[in-house]
Image 1 (cartoon, rainbow, N blue to C red):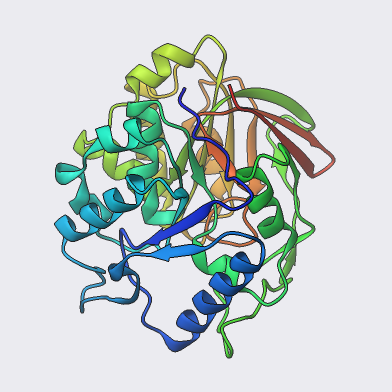
Image 2: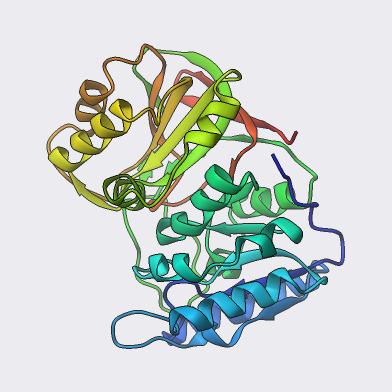
Length: 333
């Protein structure tokens, strides 16, 4: 596994928009504050032109431009950490044009969530480069940083390698007035396991299920090399849902199981679904994965319902779940 160098004390952060751009005034204010705050912490921010543009359908720019702007950051020796501006729907258009050699020649931390699963999953599962499933760039712009944001930067800087689950979470996306608002404490957080308290570990891989389902159905991603290489250590799959119903979730998980995606799995971790068409998310998942006698964890701090842990695709991650609280530690080798 190729692990990019950690962000140095004066290292630059790049921001690009592989999906949707930022056009709302509150989002622009949030980005401005993020640049200011990160600059005060010693990290200048370099933005590509597509960050503040979007067409009527939600593309920040044509696919070839999005690829060029991402590559420009990868090839900039000052940039050590690249964060997506937002999620969206059209990152898949970049795949036929993507120059993966640029990433392998210039290993750089890539971070985002939701639609950013497209590039992150491919980079790690097919090209053996570690990536970051965490907040998009706007999270750095809240007025007072949540612990998850401080930990995110700390992990990328190489200062910390452990996290603990958070006390509460948002139930959805909240409206912003100034753009600098933090996360709301809408509901208490409790991680739950199919087998009670659990400790397990393995190479971490996953992302947004809506994207993973598309990869599997269309045959546009092949994790077989990753599975073959790391199944001896155990593999932990994490997944989170933007908008899926019970039938689609079940078909996806059963299909992946039959096609060997989960060979060597040592545990499953599921984030809080944003939208789920069904009565029992955990029950649907457990039924679909009944052939795997490994821990299946739900309510994790990953995905669309903030706050978000920093999940490092490709790292060896250990999950220690006791009485609804989970600690996660990483090994970067």
